[in-house]
Amino acid sequence: MRDVAGDPPDADAEHIRARVAWYYYVGGLTQQEIADRIGITRLRVNRIVGQVRTDGSVQIDIRLPLARCVALEEKLKDRFGLIDARVVPAIDDTQDLQRVIGEAAGAMLDPLLLDGQGFGVGWGRTLSAAIKRLTPRRFSRAWVATLMGGLTRGSGTNTFEVSTEFARVLGAECYYVAAPIYFPSEESRQALLVHYGLAEALRRARLADVALVSCGDLSSRSLLASTQIVSENLAGLKESGAVGDLLGVFLDADGKPVDHPLNQRVMALPPTDLKAIPSTILASGGLHKAPIVRAILKAGYVKRVVTDEDTAEEML
Image (cartoon, rainbow, N blue to C red; front, side, top):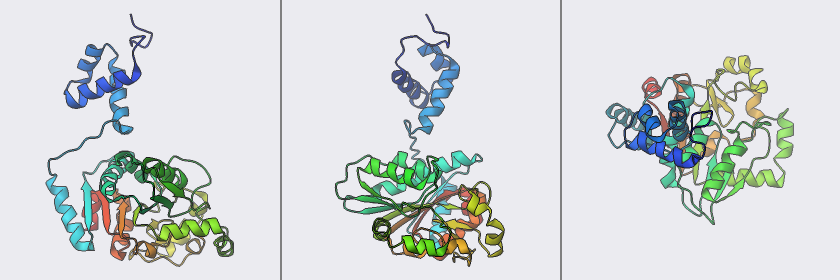
């Protein structure tokens, strides 16, 4: 007997999810074959297949070398003097691309994290996706620090939310730059910098051993560019030569901070301070971000990059 949705009334949801995932990703069955075997609708099978991939329940590790991507990785390392580079196949859907770049960044980051170290993190959908590829652990002497202020509304990818999730997975303490990204004036920013808690969080950010950051362009696809304070200043930013931002600091095509009031009002670790952090990873992609990714690599702010093949080719 089935319920109105066509599913067995007493089915255990997690058991069904596990069986669907195994049959599809390991057993090689089609979605219709799985539906017939388990006794659920094909629509539900389709939904589960998508969910377990998106939420990290299923992780695919392809051991076959992607020759074109590997060649681009070597060229990126050679051109920009990088320690490491990962290039993933290009995907048209922006959110899917952010997810796969984030997961690749998580795989690069995981072996770099050790107890007793400090980990600095930025924000965004890409960095949020990286969490799924980290090995859960219980560090007793490590800590996480945000590298920038955040938005005043929650999005699941805000600075505070992303850093909290990293700290939870690592079992580490978290230090927040508990302030907005941009202040109303340079004077108000300077006044708050003397606050003990904020000063301590920024000190921790500077002492980080490992840092994971992303970047944004100036299009409507950028979360930061779509905020009111930045959108109102877009014309001026473009006139000043900005091609995008790193940690909320707007940079020109050579990676230099542009002369604009927002750069004097930003609450974040200066990009130049990233150079002193031993292990740094930039995770970002999409052709619209090629100019800002190139600018960051050109300036030498990071030592490792994760991007997609189209963006890599454009930068080269």
